Amino acid sequence: MAGNIVETALGWVRKLTEVGVALVSLAVVLQVIFGPGVAFLPGDVVGNIIGLVNSLGSNGLVGLVAIWVLYWLFTTKK
Image 1 (cartoon, rainbow, N blue to C red):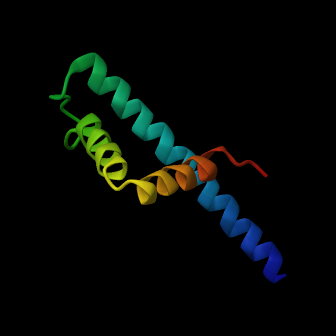
Image 2: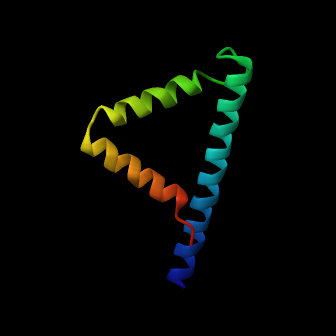
Image 3: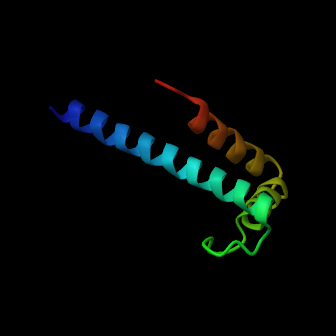
């Protein structure tokens, strides 16, 4: 019973993550096409992603490990 609950929760987390990645991808495409002044996007999505990558890259080994973990989380399918 507990294993089933955990699997269900993990399934929800995976689906929500997929939806989040799809929304971020859509926001990036819209911002590339229409520029940073897209009316229904709150903020600069591309600028935030660039800032995140720069901050991870400036941290050396810790940044590389964080990038590897994020890559592993998004590419590992069960």
